[in-house]
Image (spheres, rainbow, N blue to C red):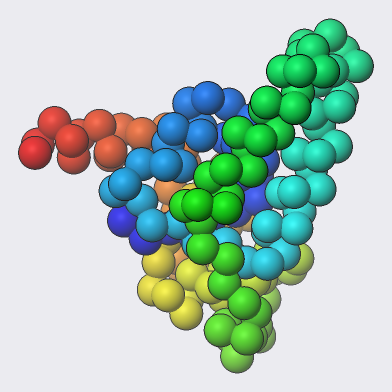
Length: 147
């Protein structure tokens, strides 16, 4: 299954064991825009120290979590250059008027004829299929049971 991953998914799932395992699922071919990757890295590097300051993680656990969060990004997720979908910017902006900053994700989904993995309701109605984490987990479970 080819999916374009939104930043909200990566940020949330890379900070969870379940999410790291899900991202590594061999049935998934995951792609992100450079903007999504930049936003994800920024947010993860901001959130992990907050988790330490709130007593949710020790310094050692934080270092481990940061390494664990980076691993799937480096090994499993393909970052696609804007030059591959820039020609679809106008169409993508028209499809996601509530949050025009998300146009690259829509444009990449259009260029690759792929679905978007997101929890962001702004993508609903953009003309591209969307998957939430919960529906994706059910689909993967059902597919593995059928095989």
